[in-house]
Image (cartoon, rainbow, N blue to C red):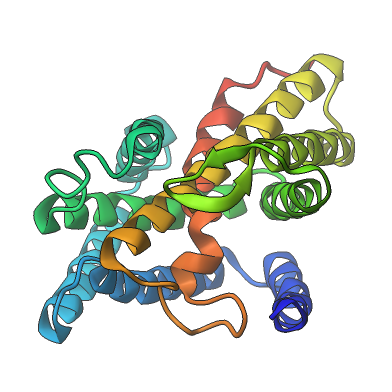
Length: 276
């Protein structure tokens, strides 16, 4: 129900904001890692693993997370976190192809357990690395808050634009409720939020314009994340990935946009022009 979704969101958003502002980076990393491990349990369910297999997958993801943390490097370009962020960016680009042709070829490729599990490791580990990197960077709390507000703005803009203006289906074989008009509304809302974020962060005109383009791309790739989890759910014949959040489903239902957008936000920040 809509009222349940709204109440849950109103309860969670202040907690997220306060946590980002006042918790140390290690706490942020551990909390998000815990959420991704819950997501790993759900991912195993989407691949129809039995309980021992799902438990094993959670352990595997936890081990990889630990290795990435141990092998991270102060020089971001050389760190293990960069490898996973880069792999995740490539995966989410490839996911666009699968969204366009679903369900053709899905069962024989991404829907296979071995490939699906490999994709899951990349998709679940990279956001932890990205969130950790953002929070410990210069202006870390502001950058991370801006990122989450971009996601929320895109989601809200897409919802209201889709409800009021939606006529043309975006990906009817994956998610019949999503419309092209909704996607445009999400992009517009994210671009406007990015402009506000750039002002708060003190960016100059050139960097602000680039940041607004990044905001639009984050909105688009977040939709890809949402649609990708929908593909896994359709293949598994499940409505939700879990039941952790009342009215929102599981971790993957709630954070599907973050999975795709967090790695790309970090990558995009490194491509922004320097301040003058």
